[in-house]
Image (tube, rainbow, N blue to C red):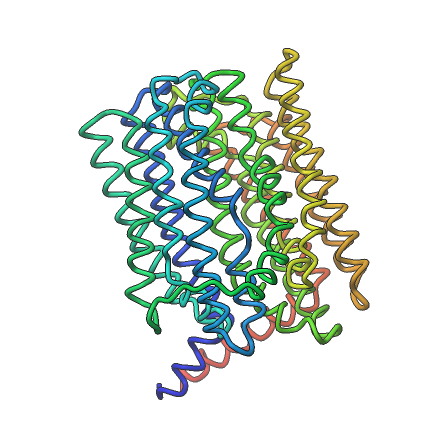
Length: 488
């Protein structure tokens, strides 16, 4: 293949998607393997404390997310170097302020989880955002040209190093402190690799006008980041603080399976879809067509991945983490449905962000977080995890409906397809709930039921989606053509 052809291949959306999915997939696989090994190396109470370290670190990462990278991808047409260097300065400032915030509240967090002796360890989490603040953003700027290899290399290298450090120390120390040291090592290596792969020399400077524009774009997302964290991981805080770290350790075995898959797919698809949608925002018909394709992919993945997982996640949890971690199948299925809806809603959130409507995402995340807050009140009043997770599902349903209304209201073409896909998604998840809670879906039998549901969902997609039928027809025609060529 010529150099020109290689260049075209590297900037092709399919290649870009596969690249970032590989990077995210490797990272999620490493993180998941790390968590499984930690659960095996530590007793349930210690594993629960390790989960709180991961949760607190994630909270500060999401709470301080001002979408600087999204602004760089979306608005760096005229002078990308100027925008990047101004964002470098803001990134450093954000890292320092986040680190100070972690140090300030670490004693309170330790007491909240019933582990006051670990407050210095919670404070050590401050190093991660500090290291991340000095990253070189050339790897994000490359995504304007749909080049994902630099970010993939940063992810793979840092995750692998963090895994080795964490598991090695956990084996030697038999302590949850290993996860904190491993996370800090991971962020440090990510920053180092981002500089090694950069196309330009690192520079950071203050630009008042540029900073105001960047912050005007990102500040509405601060509240959204807080609320998104409450919606995505606030359940762990509720379980850990109100039910204890041992209960959290068991509950986390289910959520870690589901959220690992969710994070992988959301990052892979979103990293490709956002720049494509952002570039199409000036053409309403083209934007509607791209969003239609994104909706079909989201529905296909819900059917092929999340519906089966919602049915057999209890079996998978016991198989991977051990029999000492037990979760009620109804609770596990309801968590699976909540995560499925969160994944499906991500394509609507990506569309809103590409439109520049970051404030609309705040509204949807507020509704989503309300489910966790209502569930916390229910748990405090003596209700169990079944009620808690049911309220999470209800909030996700409402958030999906509001996001759908916001997106379709802004479209001039193809509104009905998004309503249809959301209705079908809800129907498939309802069938999964009935299968998981009313049928004896234990052991390998749960896998068979899950496979049948996945095939049924994909068959529905094939029946209703002309794009899907055209892709299958083209693939079959190509295969037949290759077969005839081999025969001759």
